[in-house]
Amino acid sequence: MKTTSLLTGAAFMLLSAAALAAGPKQVDSDQASGLQEMGTVQVSGVAGSSDDAIHALKAKAAQDNAGHYQIVALGNSSDSSLWGGTAILYK
Image (tube, rainbow, N blue to C red; front, side, top):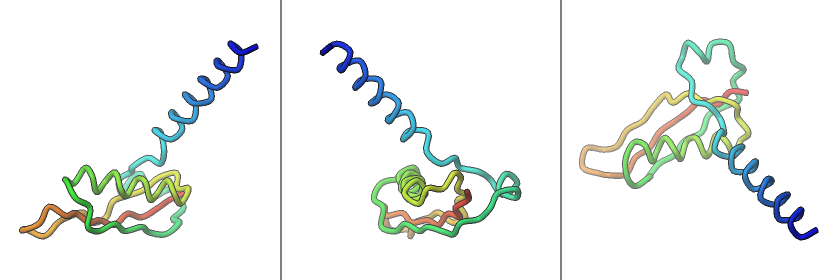
């Protein structure tokens, strides 16, 4: 009985992690043309690199239950390691 519970719990954890890892998919403007827009999200003051800002935008897209997102702005000021960006969300 305990083995079954442990296996069930482990399987649930793996499925949950896989679903979270998949999350919304980044698309380009051509791919987004056939999708229904949901709105936009923005991040600012993200320390690190452009990858960190992209990850933050993807996390916000996932929080809003978007299936896809398109990054339309990404950057930092020349004297800063703080990044910001904007993404359009799609169903």
